[in-house]
Amino acid sequence: MKVVPSARSPLSLVAALVLAALAVLAVFAPRADAATDVSTIARALRESPVYVDPEASGLLSQADAHALQERIEKADKPLFIAVLPAGYPTEDLFTDLRTATGVTGLYAIRLGDRFDARADSSVLSRTAVRNLVTSVQGEDDVKTQLDDFTDRALANMGGSAPASWGSSGGGGGVSTSALITAGVVLVAGGAGAYTVVRRNRKRHEEERRAALDRLRVVVDEDITAFGEELDRLDFHPAEPGADDAMRGDYERALDAYDRAKSAMAAAARPEDVRPVTEALEDGRFSLAVLAARREGRPLPERRPPCFFDPRHGPSVTDAEWTPPGGSPREVPVCAADAGRLKEGRDPAVREVDSDYGRRPYWEAGPAYGPWAGGYFGGGLLPGLLIGTMLGGMMSAPAYASDYGSGYGDFGGYEGGDVSGADFDTGDFGGFGGDGGGFGGGDFGGGGDFGGGF
Image (cartoon, one colour):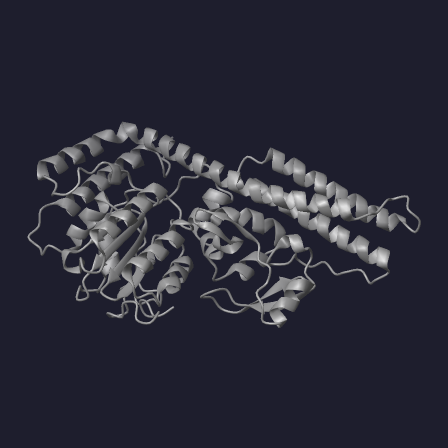
């Protein structure tokens, strides 16, 4: 019987390494082009995350570029930034640069006074890229714009930095003989493919453990808050006026509290957090029903918790809310937040820790997806988060493998992997479907990137 190799068999990995070697040779082979051709930029980005063209040195100082480089390398994310002169040709620039660099990642370009970015969908979704670009579009100062974009991108993107950043000797060109030697090593390294996969798997597991540790702090706060609600309840099953329905509500709330604690104690991966917040949501609704019975009010309908902070309890109505840079949408809110919004004040938003300080949970990175998913299940969450950074991350293919289902599935290239020309050019074309990436030269024109969103 003929055995067909799997998509990720050692044979296919060797073939991928051969293609990667050819891509390296093609990218770095000596050329007679101008000093700022795409190959020159690509070569620099394979050695360092930040490239400043000599003709654009007035836009970003060497010290600022170095500080930006160190920040990206410390974060260990595949973010590439190029600062180019205003007259640089824009046609197919992102696609050509991604092809020449050959590394999966997020590519941002400041070109004169214009700015734009593209990314492989395994690293960051198109929606998230669009939101990130829009969030910094009005900033004229190059350093400020790139710093802000970098901070927000690093907090939301997936993947890890390419190994080539740590292997560069810095500065000058690369000899052809050295490249040929590297190519031979790559081709002969098929036996090492398994080692690479194991190393990537270990790195991903470490990232997921770190995400779970961050989630644990937030969930423990939620569990503690619910426990305090139970303590303040001042209800006893044997008190005068208590009936079986009330006792049932109270018992369900206590059971939810115990389920949440047990589930969190057993959590081993970020997605294991979802049952915890599902239990807390169920417990808070039981308390709301119990309160209505004790006060003789009509029983509340089953509604999702308050969008701004699920600890506020079940929502009582829907209110219009617009995230920064996003579109208006109806979100479930508690009575207190509904009053704040009606008066033109800000709601009481749940902020959590991120790599860059306290942020609303929908701006704090993909690790908070399982936490929010437990509170807002039943298909409700995507509609609430559309246009936010968390919503953009959750729509990316990389999200499922890192924070949802799909553990152990290493299909596709991860952020920072060398893929050569093997990537979806649609990720680097115009958001409006023009395919060129700049809408016929409209590069970052007032927020209309690549033919419009």
